[in-house]
Length: 168
Image 1 (cartoon, one colour):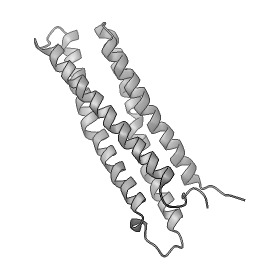
Image 2 (tube, rainbow, N blue to C red; image 1 turned 90 degrees about the vertical axis):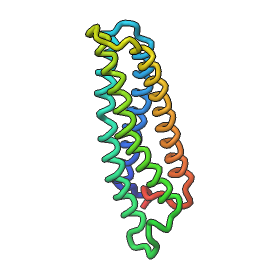
Image 3 (cartoon, helix red, strand yellow; image 1 turned 90 degrees about the horizontal axis):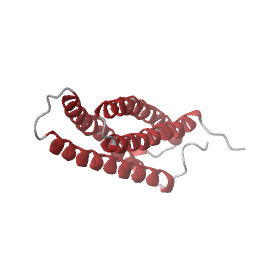
Image 4 (cartoon, one colour; image 1 turned 30 degrees about the vertical axis):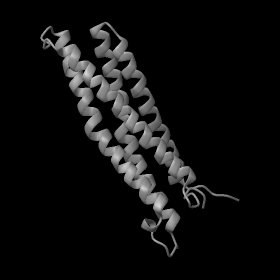
């Protein structure tokens, strides 16, 4: 009989949370761009912010369950985790994704929100629309990069060279 570790199941659930935040964030971003009404834009931004707060939760859960999976995988083994190229690559990509998600995404989104609020309060700079379009392009790039990193991490996880740590 096959037993599955709790850490592995939680890791899979965390992947689901991360997928949800990425997809919902992207969909809400598109909705915000198409919305002509500024108060509704701000409302959409508020929903997106709440969804975005799940990202750090997913990141922490993935980190903790990932460490537990590494521990389970190498328990009683003579080899070291850093000798597994696929695992090292996955960790590096994960770190890049987390830092990108912590630094660039929130900064771009806050900048755009500040401009939309200034439009709502009738104190926006003359070039606010141009600045917002520029930020929109950068936010699209942010979502593309995060999605590619995520898909590459998933690919490495599924097709990595080793037995998956979830199966004991």
